[in-house]
Image 1 (cartoon, rainbow, N blue to C red):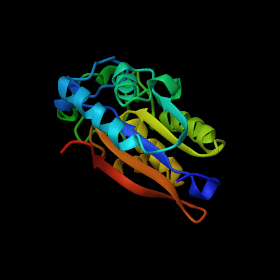
Image 2 (cartoon, rainbow, N blue to C red; image 1 turned 90 degrees about the horizontal axis):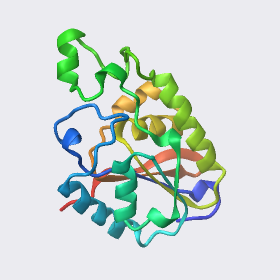
Image 3 (tube, rainbow, N blue to C red; image 1 turned 90 degrees about the vertical axis):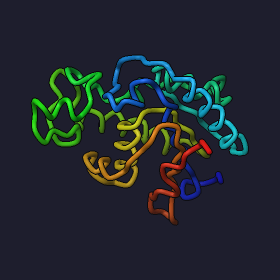
Length: 196
């Protein structure tokens, strides 16, 4: 679907699996490559996106996103955006939520502090800049990025506070679509796996 602003769709692709994503480790700025399964899933993303006419393709600069984009067949037309990097987890990089909660009971990235990292408001500001670019584009857009960043971007697309990204579970190697119902921003589909 393409045309005016009310028919625009934004295809959100969370990168394929990595060793860290498989084990639930917070993977922000560390540039972890795709696993073999992640590369297989990226090829399936290409089959899903091939029929679409895209006016703009954006990707995070981190290799797990750019490689997913390249394997999906969109690397040549993709534009790298620093704003699409994953949340900077600072001192919690590479740790699981369970490990963090042993030191900080009840901790959540959505509501807790991230020492030496980004706040949810800082991630939201980056997502809002990307949304500005999307909304100034005529036609459909594809974005290759990361779990928490995509969830914040989705909350902001819907006009919700960035913390409400916690409501949108998002697996690796999934495709989601944002769009409109008349003039209202909506989720058209969410967390659709590309694997069989």
